[in-house]
Image (cartoon, rainbow, N blue to C red):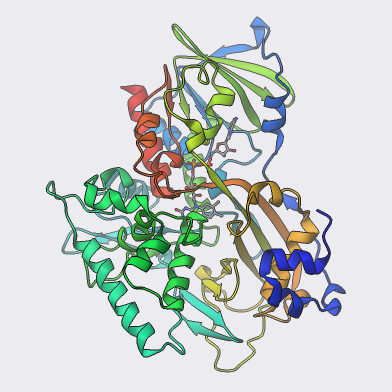
Length: 531
Ligand SMILES: Cc1cc2nc3c(=O)[nH]c(=O)nc-3n(C[C@H](O)[C@H](O)[C@H](O)COP(=O)(O)OP(=O)(O)OC[C@H]3O[C@@H](n4cnc5c(N)ncnc54)[C@H](O)[C@@H]3O)c2cc1C
């Protein structure tokens, strides 16, 4: 997009900041890099309305085809292999599997391209626990039966810090400079959260739990889905700017939506679903340098023979006795005849790929709306120098209070490598703009790298000299948007039912994008297919 640098920075980082950041000297040293990943080809191929007829010798037969190799598809494949079922193939569009949880290989450590942590599951989530056990992450159980994960896999201290007016402070809630009223409101907010943590319906279900399928559907809770989180805060008298920032950070971080775009139900889900009972800490985070890429690699290892990369599924035709799946493999069409399909791709794509779905839809696929993000991996020769001796030190998650980005995660942190080269992963949800996805693809590598560096430079003026390379992933359909009225409007339940012999499995089915939800739906679909 043809914009001046100042217009670009104003659009991404705000006018006051753009004025301050437009220092031409900063442009003398600019790192190398490129836009990586996501193939934009599927939309083009489908729009061409091609004929997908294939010669008889280009067909093969399998019992099951899994479409999509994100966490949901890979979990289904893992489950099949675990149950000694081998007559299936997983077809993944990209060169790399993992979807939004994939990672990159680098020096000194691997690094994430999207998802980067998993909270330790509650003891009830037995299947996820058994997966973590298979990865040898679990140490023991406590007296209440909750799992204890080995210390080296739990997020290392310091976990979070926040940059505000030139200084770094500990934690995510901005305590420094908080007024009496800010503190009072923060205390009241915690009380409200506690009430929801302790809330149970008549069947004993929690209001907010993971996986989402175990949450209560009582109207007292689901009515929270009808309003925005911003409205809920207003109704409860929470006007403190820093409390609102804290809640806005939460919805941007987990859902890619601002406070006034996300439903109150998902806002509260963020704060309540990972706390066992009031008064105890939220479940600790499991993380690795490459984030959830470690889980992806484990799933891949278990089903590697069944996984085919660079296979764009372009057509799925339900038949009386099965399903015909057609994919583009290095420009050539190939077909797989199967009995059943697990559709582990984003749900909005169903009408474009599944023949007959548009005319006879079992759910409204356009209700599954995604938002866009860009993620930048910055390769640094050395650590940014602290500006003040007493600044809070580099943490795992480093957040900039005055920025619309989410800040960055340090890949070396979990390894305890606190000196020398590092890789910082910068996250920017495109929720501040109308049509974020279209715009994202109009910006080139240089423009997005400029935004990232200019934003980082407010906390680290030496970032230009330290960064040797910056690669960028544009996630056009990064995650499902849990806007008001979506989670409990019934469309997810309908989409959970198979369409002919096609079983859906994607985190979209939960209305929120989380590893646990993708895992849950992959497993659910695998079980229903074999049954
Ligand atoms: C920036 C970012 C940060 C995140 N951070 C976290 C986090 O810290 N913790 C967490 O739990 N979650 C996080 N998430 C969400 C998490 O990544 C997802 O919920 C989860 O990994 C989704 O898995 P999935 O398999 O359902 O979907 P996807 O990851 O969307 O996978 C779908 C797969 O289908 C493939 N596909 C699509 N169309 C076709 C086709 N026609 N043919 C073949 N293949 C096709 C895609 O290429 C993709 O690999 C994050 C997401 C993003 C974008």
